[in-house]
Image 1 (cartoon, helix red, strand yellow):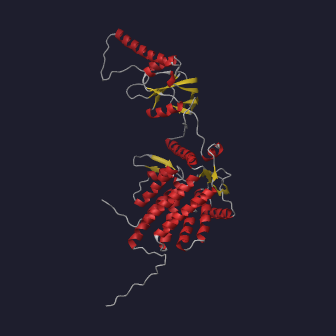
Image 2 (tube, rainbow, N blue to C red):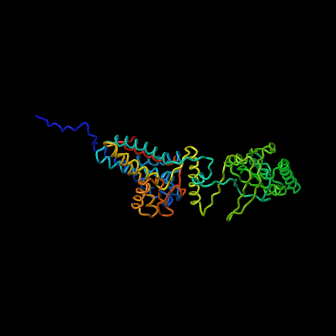
Image 3 (cartoon, rainbow, N blue to C red):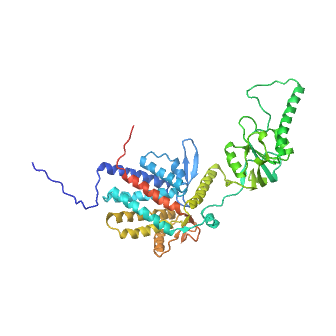
Length: 475
């Protein structure tokens, strides 16, 4: 019986045909990961939409921060979880660009699906993506503008200016303004002591009652005299869980001694406050000494909206800390403002790590697409084909920025290509004006580290997903 030999496939070809199961696993992984990217895509850019997230504990969060959105999503599919971790990695590395990195990864996965359908081996695609990302980092570095940390204007362009004074709890009666302040942070109570065990004392004689009250007054006055003897005129009192940190009687005597009192300072704020004021916390009245005090030009109570705050300014030998007072109409707005502030501070941190700025508004991505596309034309075989797909995928950033701003994305991206082909490498989308401008001149800039990290991490994530050909579940 003669057997028919299978046709021999040329060993030189770069085409690859995988078996059905491996195709299905890889395709399902890519589709699941892309669905995560599509979920946050509409949040990209200053005109991006917000997401309302309702958690299992009935907590409601409104945000357009990619890391927050993905962190709150209950993603079950393993490959889709990788995009959640990708966003966290970008947040750790750069603090910003958490939506961008996921959107880029989603676009790369879409191109990978097309390349796989053409029979290109996953390893060939993976290696090509790696080469493209290395080249992309070189192109971005060449575009970047060096910045000195002493150049305040450049830092201000990259992040909002932080406040330089300390804001803490409300004042507790007495003086509301104190110049040439001598400040103490205390961790003991200015109130009558209590016994170590729970007990009740019944007083039936009025003379004994007077004696108890007299002892309490004497005890409190003795403490206040020791405080006043050091020259202290501002007192920050840690919140106590054992008994009242201060009583009405002690507040009365502190006010008569012209000492401004700020009570109920939380325990976890003590370290920050003492570092800011350059003073030492005092745990016992017997340790109350002048050398443990902090000094400031002014401590004052200010009315702010419906409430009041205490502001300490002109701190002598102030520690390297900053306080920012965030106000909003509700807690949802406050939480989002805090996340935005975190991103702004991370921008400055990025500039310390890598002292280069780059244009925003989709300018880096469209320039990368142009240069990588030109490079792909001189490469041979499947590598050039894969790198061209990488270049095309990067256009998702300017396309999405234009789309979210209500502009015509096709017309905008086409015009950007033309402008960059003429050498205008800093031309990008000004979403506030709704037109294409020189983004660098508009001061729309971001740290180089944000862009390079997004490209590198997105590529690594996509390569990992490509290499997975099976999912094994262990029970």
